[in-house]
Image (cartoon, rainbow, N blue to C red; front, side, top):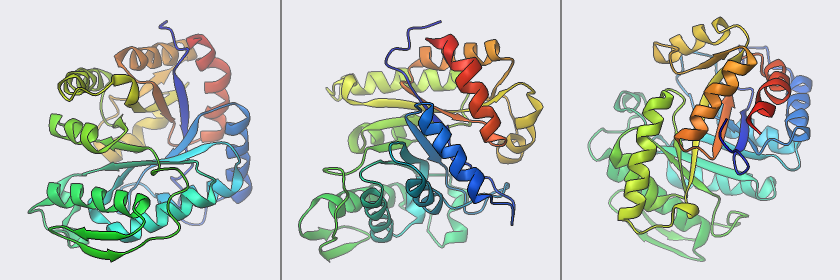
Length: 299
């Protein structure tokens, strides 16, 4: 196994909840246990229109903040071009304040087929995305806004700012080299999608390292994460939801503990320093198996 002294592990927030099935006590117990076990953070995803039932990320993260004291909380990723950036910046700054500075923010461009239901035109979507990020960063860090962009013109101020200064860690996702370059320009980390295989992620990391060198940016200042769909035990447990979401479950790490440890080791070797473990369902049981049977093999 690879040396994992500096590797960090995160877990998913229980977010795939059928109508009427949310169990507040179980949710709180899961988060307390994740904190006890020393996980770095817990992460949501955004899925407003999703083939699987999915609670909203900001609401889940806010609830989780009230249930925990140390666990950091993130979303990988907000499809931020679908949001009004002032509203999103305000919600995230408020959550960062409420959590005492435990927020991690992931943003991504998303696919073009997501745009139409939200009334967002495909034309200029990359410019809309990057300008929205710039506006949110300004809201979080500038005492007085005087923002004159192509899509938004804003005068005023947003208070309170984000608790973390100048703002929370900003992760960016994406598949293409252009997305990786945007992450280096605007973000503090890159997060590989759960839909990406380990081989595809390794190729992204190679591109990332070349772009960091080209930008003369210290690789130590830029973090790399990967969401990993995982099932300790029966692989069939994740196949149905993953096939609904992506049409395939080939990207998942599954099987007995030693096979899962090997799969995670490959993700670490590919370049991740934060691994987001996402079992999709049966999170509490999987949490115990991951902490007790899989992760010890990596140290």
